[in-house]
Length: 435
Image (tube, rainbow, N blue to C red; front, side, top):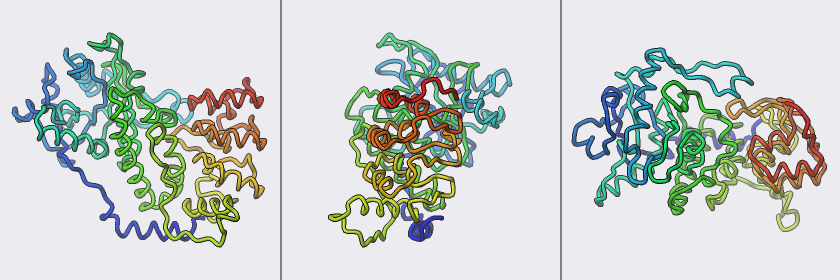
């Protein structure tokens, strides 16, 4: 059961949701797919505007596609029209039925085949393309510069309005760096990770994230990337961009937390409240959001019992009634504490004899997380080193079998956590356990 304070706060938010809703500060310019398919070169925003090619997107016009990509040179996104030619051919092939969008391999193995977009969804008469060089001012004048800044800040809004989020990443040589760009290099870029995070944190229902590696090879993006590819840990041409990213990501997380509360999706709220520091704030010099729910009160004096005070505060902001009760999705408080790397709360729970191996009962399919995850497994996949060390010192079971049949070593590998792997191996995790 959810606490009364959480339910009351969610009800109050729902009544006043208009007052906290964000607003787009720059027009969402798109290129109709009919015009895009006729292009033979990449022209910048100002040229397309002068030619009357750009449209102000409105949902009544059809569906929008956000194109996330790497530039193929330092000064031009696609100087030889190689990258966008792949997207043109992809759209033609999908509509013609000569190419189809496959499932993410791991997700299909674990959860089975799911419905993907239909070829008709890409019909050119109803599709509109958002692409940075088309849609954001590119010239150097003061007005264009101001427009560019506000357009960049509006990227999360653009992403949320798009039915399709396309990762355009064919293997092509960068003109200046003389290296091949690909899906792997796209995933290393900080701005690309931020655009992916904007999709994950958008309030849009439905839609598809599609990876285009060639005109005949398209697949849905695996959701597990968010567990290991934080925007701030990506590569940036300008290190100062981290400040921009930090502001954007902070606003996106706040907005999604409020959205979950307004719609009474309390498990999702708890998940994001406790995981956002690892998933989205890491390496961005941001303070984690540790609570939203007002009205916290306790008789515990923090100067006398700091751990007890912090535990009560944790329960309040997570809307949990006590330290033993699971939420509706089958997650116990100790798993949320491990997720937030809150070692004070973890120790307080252990001091009160909470089962250190208490596990989740349901999977998180959108993130490809199995059921039966313990606090140790969760801390391992999120690279929460301090929580892993505390749980190992407290004798957490390192070979507890999760819903995939693996142990914490498997989740550490899934989270790209070499330090966690070393800690778990030192604790005698079974390296031969098969999932």
